[in-house]
Image (cartoon, rainbow, N blue to C red; front, top):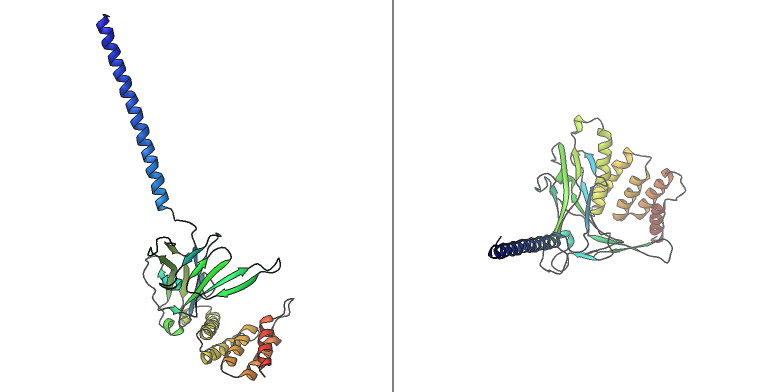
Length: 298
């Protein structure tokens, strides 16, 4: 090869090296850029800070069978395992106003009207100097949730609302959403695990008696919470007649009678409940407390 040919070959080799180096550099830059974009998207999509959890039960369970006219008490709870506080609700509306119940499959509203029963509350578990933990109750409209705090509310479908309930299976869930009116606060959309309600026809079920007793029991709880003592008295009386060896309906019957302004009759009912209370290592403290309070009012 002539000297000119060698110089030309060297020039081509140098150009090739430059092109290869340039290609490698561009690939490296592009790879870094894509990785940076992925990290940015992941950070943007990830929930900022600790995430609270929303839970739901109905009449104290995840799945129930009821007859028409049985009230439904949906207990909605907010918790947070982190020690970092998350605040939901406040001056622009309570956390309870951000909760709604929907059908799990479609997201549509419930078939029955529901309304808050009582006030939302936050249960605070406090340390007690190494002994048994103490419990405080707050009733603020804002839910400040962190470890050791549970915010809770009840949404209820009344016996009247459930009177026309059609037989079938209904799967419900609770949802809570808080937007970004205050960009430095918590924002997000929470969904609970579903609960299942099976409405039975009274004439077409093999456990009608048990379901009628459960209807009386839940009606008693509903009417007491709704401050309707006469309705609660009738429901508790029916419940106690169906389950005469159970002290709970008698205790709640006494509560209803006491709310009607009849303390002596209530004391008699509480003592009757004591007689049917099963013997155990733990005394019936709830009954003793009620008897002591009414006895002090004499």
